[in-house]
Length: 146
Image 1 (cartoon, rainbow, N blue to C red):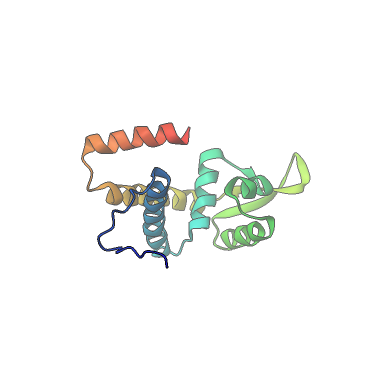
Image 2: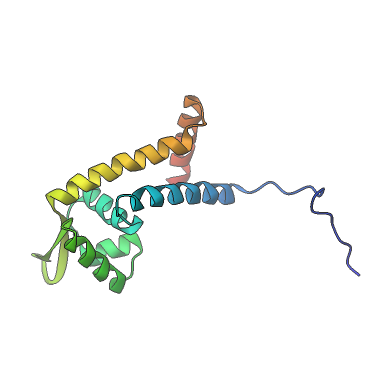
């Protein structure tokens, strides 16, 4: 019969870096999703708007691929963003079979507001860290993300 271990007193292994990064990312994502929901915005909406602010008008298919959103879901997502008045879908002048997605003025204003909101969620998450620790964390994450 296998020996049982008292889990209350057993020495637990330290969580690995990947697990800790995932837990921190999940915590941030959950907080951001809640803050976005308070404004009637979904995380995927925010991702599209933020990407368009960062890189300008984009082909719908390329935008979906970049964000990891399948073609069918992307069509519905862009339909909803267009209904809200945040983006417009135009024929791509380089390829008339494709669409290019562009931000509208209300979309730009919302994207700027959401970027500020995201920074606030970041600040709240990191509030317990000293300024030097925040800087060190940022530098280390930059190294890992490169």
